[in-house]
Image 1 (tube, rainbow over the protein chains, first blue to last red):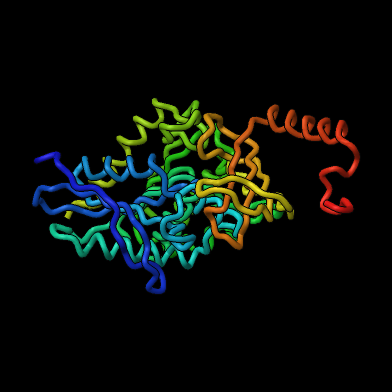
Image 2 (image 1 turned 135 degrees about the horizontal axis):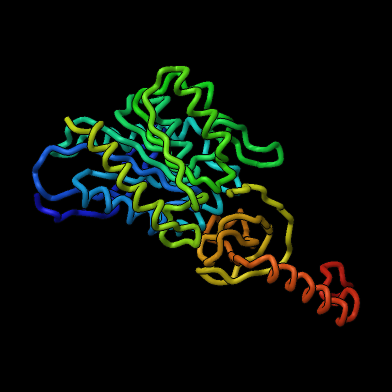
Amino acid sequence: MSDAMWAGTVAITGNEGAELEAYLARPLDDRPRAGVVVIHHMPGYDEATKEIVRRFAANGYAAICPNLYSREGAGVSPDDQAAAARAKGGVPDEQVVGDIAGASEYLNSLDHANGRIGVIGYCSGGRQSFLAACSLDIDAAVDCYGAFVVNDPPAEFPLKVKSLLSKAPDLSCPLLGLFGAEDSHPGPEEVAVLSSQMDKLSKEHEFHTFPDAGHGFFSTDRPAYRPAAAVEGWKKIFAFFGHHLAA
Amino acid sequence: MCTYVTEKIALDGAGKGGSGWFTVREGLVYVDHPYHACHEHTVNIDFTNPDEGPSARVAVELTEESALALIEAIQKALALAPPGLASARRPGS
């Protein structure tokens, strides 16, 4: 297998036909491959997330990260887009689902697509990965420390989202959850509630909570980075996608 | 943690952003993850003008100590100046 890849910005069609900016990375060889939609964290469509996209391509997947804040304007820097989206209380769930659906369709339209799609998200993207898996026909989903999957945001938070627990019966695929023992959003008690709900609904899931790690432990460019948890976490991700996304 | 809590205030002044000077109309203050500063959490202040789009923004990310020192410095500087010197309501300004 060649490890050469193509990576760069593409335009995709998101919710209600909106044109979105997206970052695509895909191997150059002609082997059949699955697609992975990478959902960025709340600070937006940043360099660290693009690096994650390239990591999936280096491991044989066609991966894409749609810029969920594209509607804040073309040519606007990602940090300004993130600030503008934040000031509006975040992006609506229905819009995110439509954008992820568009990203999945784009991946499945590429040459050598095997028709299988995984989603993975970090922080707010972890919640949105769960949301996508409960709303779309997905083959495998990874939730990395997504807050507000179980609990509603506190009343004083301006965030326009709610708990997703009521959507859990619609989960369409196996779920991998990666959490930090020192995180408070989601805290270990929320992870336990989600796990027990998955058990109750007989939904296939695999949860790991890493010690000495808090929120954002995969973020290599932030002080929250915890190499031991991140290295182990990446192993779990590739084992999970390798198992569930093979044609 | 991502707090999402944002204090919004109306402002009157000017700021210099990535594409030059603009009229500042709004201030957003939040304690959350920074975009650039190398700390887990910072006090983030955005000086913006929503009418001019998302790029009309001056962003600063400060530690709690720095933010409190800034508040004190602003209050000291204002106390040392003649009262009302920088007020929008100052006669003849």
